[in-house]
Amino acid sequence: MDEDQLRIDLAASLRLFARLGMHEAVANHFSAAVSEDGRRFLMNRKWQHFSRIRASDLLLLDADDPGSLAGGEVDPTAWAIHGQLHRRAPHIRVAMHLHPVYATAISTLADPTIKPIEQNTARYFNRVAVDSDFSGMADTEAEGARLVALLQGKSRLMMGNHGVLVTSGSIGEAFDDMYTLERACQILCVAYATHQRLNVLSDEVAEKTARDWEGIRDFSIAHFEEMKRILDKEDPSYAD
Image 1 (cartoon, helix red, strand yellow):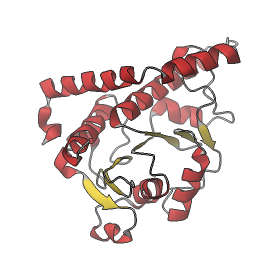
Image 2 (cartoon, one colour):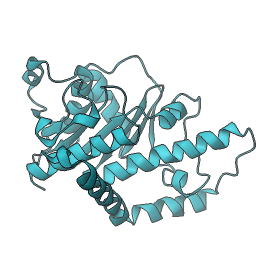
Image 3 (tube, helix red, strand yellow):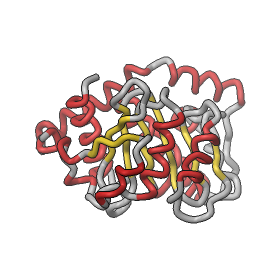
Image 4 (cartoon, one colour):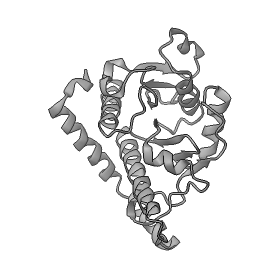
C-alpha cells in the first residue's frame, strides 16, 4: 500500500475511534510503517484531537533519527513506544495504543486475563501478552524496548494499570482487533459486575474459537471498509 493510502486509512481509524469514544483527550497514538524495514512510519502529532486529524496531518518519522523530536510535534511517550516498535520489529506494520475504558479497567485487575466466556472474549485466548510492571509514563527508549520485548510473538499487549496495545499487518485488521478487544472487555466487565460465577469456556472450545477468528481476516478488513464508507458519507475531510 502506498503512503497516500496509508495516510488516509490511518486518519480514518483515528477519526473512527473518536466517534466510538475510545480516545483519551488529546493523548494516545497510532502508527503505520511506510518503508519495507519498518523504520520510516506515519504517526499522529502531539496533542491533536483524533476527531480533527486529516491524512495530511500525520507525521512521517524515522525510528533511527531522534532528531524527529526536535520540532516539538512528537509526544515523547509516543516516540518511546512506536519508535522502538518500528525499529525493533519490522514485521509490525501498524501499532495502535489506546486507554479505552473497559480494556483499561481489565488492565487494573490483579488478573487481567480476558477470560473466554463467549466468542469475542475467546478471540483473545492465550493471545495477549501482559505487562505487570507499570512504572509511570512510558517516555524513554528503554521503556519502549521493554514493552516490545514483552510481546514475544503475540500481537496484543495488555498494559497493566495503563491501557492496551494492538499490532498488526494492516490498518484494517488492527482497527477491528482493537474494536473487538474493547468489546470483549466490556462484556467481561458486565459479567463480573453480576457477581455471579462465570461460565468460562473450555480450553478446547476457546482455542477453536480463537483459531476461527484468525481464519477470517477478510471480516476485519470488511468491518474497517464499511466504517470508512460511513465516514465518506458523513465527513470525508479525514482524507484531505
